[in-house]
Image (cartoon, rainbow, N blue to C red):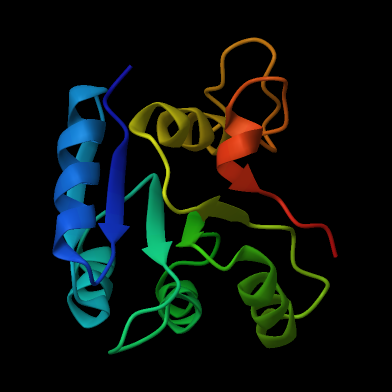
Length: 149
């Protein structure tokens, strides 16, 4: 199987560097950027299996970036990274409506191993015992919060 290609967006350069190096070691192809406007350009010009977006960024928040991504490519797969899961989940639901499916929220800080489990679960590549929603008895559930509407 070809390596999965991910777009990682966070305004903190150290986070994108660590995620890029760690995920590449796990076999993913990573484009990591620190500015949402650059991320949007990359997203429009390339095909990604998933984007991982920080929620709080100064230029444009992750939800607005997601909205712009959907204008370009419907059905874009996204996981949001945040240290403030409950607050940001409510913002997401208010902005996009309760009829949307639940989205992946990754709590920071997160280990590369837990991040890989969450990504694989979201991409339906999860090992036995992990559902596509990321729910299991593994550490994936500790690394991500799938809030229910």
